[in-house]
Image (cartoon, rainbow, N blue to C red; front, side):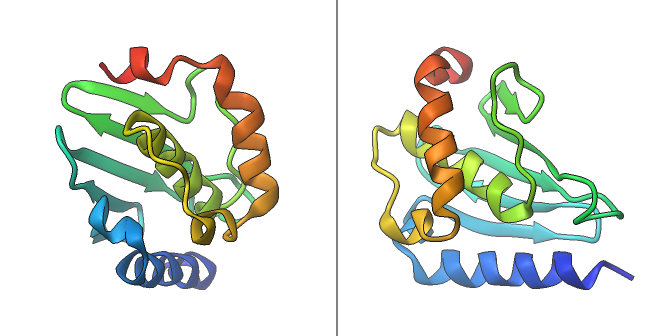
Length: 133
């Protein structure tokens, strides 16, 4: 049986994506007890996969962004550590929006304003374009 905390957090993210402007950029793709994925709709397309562990929230989730044959993951040097599924989602979305040169919408920021501040402080030092091109 999947952790109720995981299911609630994922349900909230799926609902949020369906109602937000980001629904034009990503869409929920799949959800199992082992991962949740989103399709990146804008060219060149791709996928976000978030991996909560069975011990979540005591163990942090992992994530991978795939764009074409390029991948960025939570283990890349310098990337902030996401403590929650929501933070992992925000990190992935931050990377995608940055690549598209789109500002993060306020409704995303409001998911976790403190983590958004961490993203802003960490990512200027990481060349996201080089990682995804």
